Length: 175
Image (cartoon, rainbow, N blue to C red; front, side, top):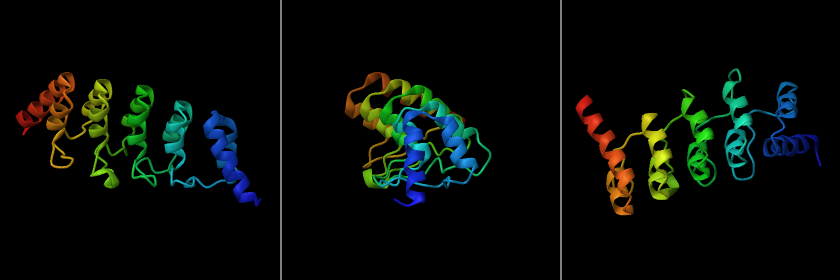
């Protein structure tokens, strides 16, 4: 196995196991490139989310630029924010949503343009919907011609429907 592949595997293992010190060493000693991705085009930020490693995620988000692209879509079209919604980890969501470069409205073009808000509605995650809307997720971006409000109605989730209705009304009053 060549040295580059060895360090690549080691970096991914560090993320999976939460070994910040070793990961930091690999990055600072230039053994790995910050822009590496796995076989599914998931970067290190994405991997820290799916492996439920908030401290690793925080390490990347707090490092001096350049950092891995926080909006980079994986092979399946999901961004790290989509992955965070799937994980339903509010601590990870909160970290991502505090990061200035996060695109809360990034669409997954392989899933009819679904945003993180659409996923949260589909999964019935009221807490995640609240965090996304608080972070300025657009409650009027449609998916398959359904607005988030219509999607919540179709899913039969009254609490999410009320939350979205509140945000839509708030937006319209602000214009």
